[in-house]
Amino acid sequence: MRTPHLVCLDIDGTTVDHDGHLHEPVREAVRAVVDAGHHVTFATGRAIVGTLPVLDSLSITTGFVVCSNGAVTLRLDPRHEARYQVLEAVTFDPAPALRVLRREFPTALVAVEELGVGFKVSAPFPTGELDGTPQVVPFEELMACPVTRLTIRDPDSTSEEFLAQTDRIGLHGVEYAVGWSAWLDITPEGVSKAAALEAVRRRLGIEPAATIAVGDQRNDIEMLEWAARGVAMGNAPDEVKAVADEVTGDVDDHGLVDVLRSLL
Image 1 (spheres, one colour):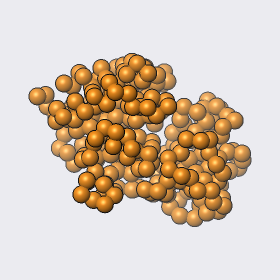
Image 2 (cartoon, rainbow, N blue to C red; image 1 turned 90 degrees about the vertical axis):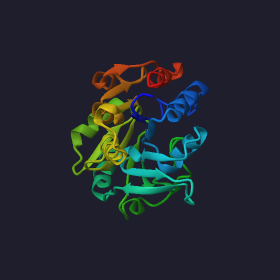
Image 3 (spheres, helix red, strand yellow; image 1 turned 180 degrees about the vertical axis):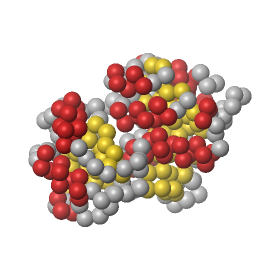
Image 4 (cartoon, rainbow, N blue to C red; image 1 turned 135 degrees about the horizontal axis):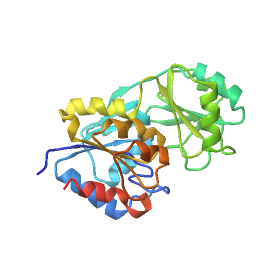
């Protein structure tokens, strides 16, 4: 077989479609790459509770997983009661950013991630947008404890408006990524999918040249630049495609399958 690669896959818009469906050709291709001896590691913005069902559908029970845009790294362990161990969970104080964001986006929805549980929110988010069962709490409680991630969502705005205003106000001591909608994920400074995957690469002893990453959104840019072979999905924004080494097909056309088959 070929040299074992570290194959880093985004989930939404890459492995599953925009409705969250895993199509059979993609499932078969992922399983073939795993069975061939490559190290498939999902790197996602999803929380733990939203990531595990995807792993179950792919029958992946061992290896590493990067969640929360790089703030959380798991080692899968079927012998463990939770089926995983948290190797790293990087947290930060959300209060300073929340104070600024509440002033700049007074009508926006706010969520903070509870590790392994889900989210606490300022008000209900649109159905299906957050993993688990979000718990509505007073705003002050959102600022009470260190968190792995802070999310801001404005259903009445656009991603372009959100990005422009976020860049204008500046956020210090954190990393942030604007999603496909008016959605802003904030994580601790220095945290990214790429940083977490580099730690996984070193744990596995994989050479840098044997790394491949596939993604479709702005939070995948660092990951695509980090990998020896960075592949953007056909449905990715132009700024994501611009940093990739190549562009594959749209998620609705199973674009990931061609990339995975090239490893077999």
